[in-house]
Image (cartoon, rainbow, N blue to C red):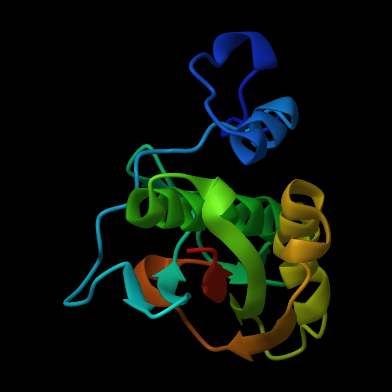
Length: 168
């Protein structure tokens, strides 16, 4: 079990249907990450949330830093992508008070710090997309971009951003 996951028995106080589903997957939402620059984690415009990019930071430490295809494996990058989702959901919950107000994920942007010859960017970001679909069902399926970049902030191997429609 990856270090960012916890056993179901260690989670208490689960208060919503979505959070129960998250707990059943063995995931504990972290404290929302502190912004790493001059921005806010989420901007709400009407019934839409525009979520800033999140890094795979867990308990103050970057998970699997480096370049995918040059020191970071596909599997390590996928694990980091799932940590990004946990951080993204923590930011959304902090904004809405509950994840049950998520109507659907509209778009996901995944940026993968990759070696020049690495071409499996979609497979890295699939880890985030698949986790959202597992948690939210059809509402977790989204339009998406999976882009390879030369580097990311703090030497992160991945950064995930999202646009989310919310219920009133």
